[in-house]
Image (cartoon, rainbow, N blue to C red):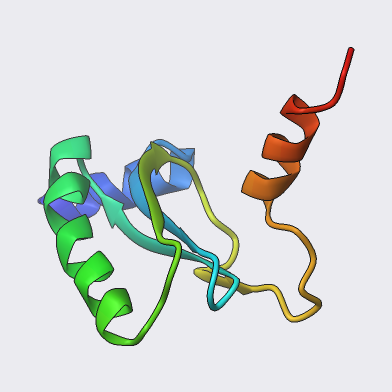
Length: 94
């Protein structure tokens, strides 16, 4: 029954996902979907451990409601991540 509810939430874009952004390699990973924030919070620990064991660095984790189009986004061009763009914009004078 829970799987059906998760599918409905996912269809509506209301399912919870674990979003993990790493600096090295420059990737964004999505894990999910999850029925609740609590379910995603519990699961994120294992995902982070796996990435750390694979040597990923600069790991930033968030749980949010979204509907990712791709589960892994790899920055092959070495362009600044969204996090870096936001940080650099916040440092610019008004």
